[in-house]
Image 1 (cartoon, rainbow, N blue to C red):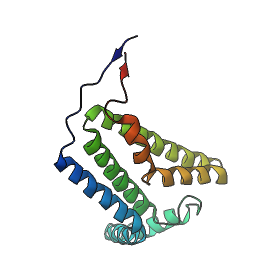
Image 2: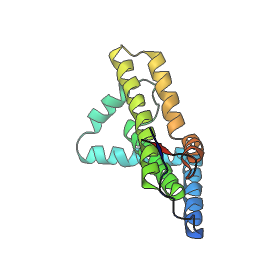
Image 3: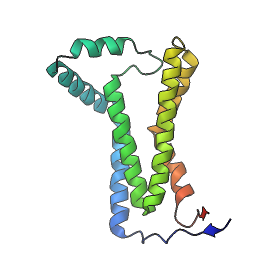
Image 4: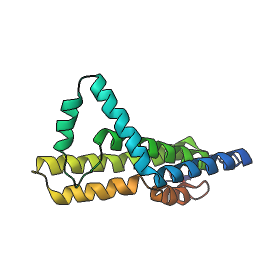
Length: 165
């Protein structure tokens, strides 16, 4: 087994620092104004479902969702989560400057989101298991927060990790 160093990352230019600062500010503002963002997303999804004639079906599906999972619109929650995680991955990519490291971060995010979905399925199939829903809720709250970025950035920072082959 030998340690193979990753190719050096390109320099972190002032333009990248500026882009990273703007992305971090956008994520901060979206997080601070999440209620307003959820209101806009909820109205947009409701309008789309009504346009497609699926308003009643969407309402029935939402009523079957445990309050331990979310009290918000499921499509709005999903959209918010994907947009926030996408912004976090973009921020990590700008700072890490390496596609391989970005893929590692994306795989960690996908693993967290997969675990969230698995817990929801277990909770639903198990007859609305509150413990599964509570754990799923904690995982999604963690995932759509700045914490994964703060953990992944130093772990994946160029020069701190090497590939073992």
